[in-house]
Length: 282
Image (cartoon, rainbow, N blue to C red; front, side, top):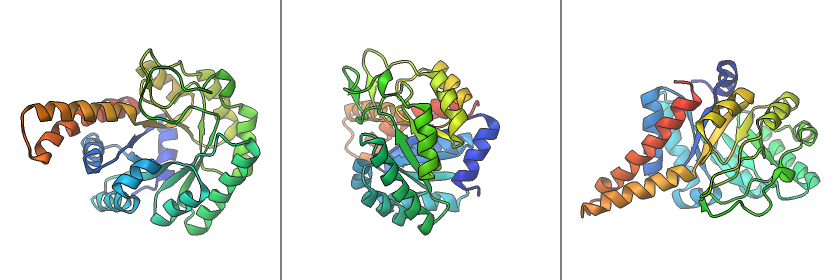
């Protein structure tokens, strides 16, 4: 089976994007992996610090490795890791990729901590990809009344800084701020800065990752992929679908978890299917 690095090269060749879906439990894993299998496309399972504290990072890695025994191209990413120490723990656990997210610090400090993570990953396993983040897009994957404080065009990623950041850290992936935002703004998410994506892609030389995919329109996704985005993160939409599905399952009065949770799984699968078809041009 191809490595994640090889699938990214494949995505570049095909001019598509790999879908990245965050999970908190085995039901989320089931929804994402079963849908990817049905569509016969690779997929990335994401677990943030909070999510992996709940489900267990080693447990997620084990689930992914079990899936790969059956030749399913499933990968696991330690999403939004806010310290080098926790990034090292994720690397030691055997993830396929990890993002060291210290974007709120100064550029110099971000560069230093990100490079430290890259150096550690290279020693442990060169196939583990390290992602850095530059610019600010907020933090919470939830429904928002307004844009998070600090998210604006002024905090979008500067292309020249991005090129320098990639060069000095040696990261494999870059998550830029290009009008995207974590969570879903009830009044509508801001528009993506497609020209900024194009400019950054031309100067950094590594695949770009779009965080905060929930709430972005299909038209913008297509434009972003054409501009150079190769991984797209979806979380909030899955959380909303899961919750609404469980609510419906509970209305039946059913007490067997595998029955009322199944409604949540089915609603998540609808979201995953729609996104994977779009991202893979199916």
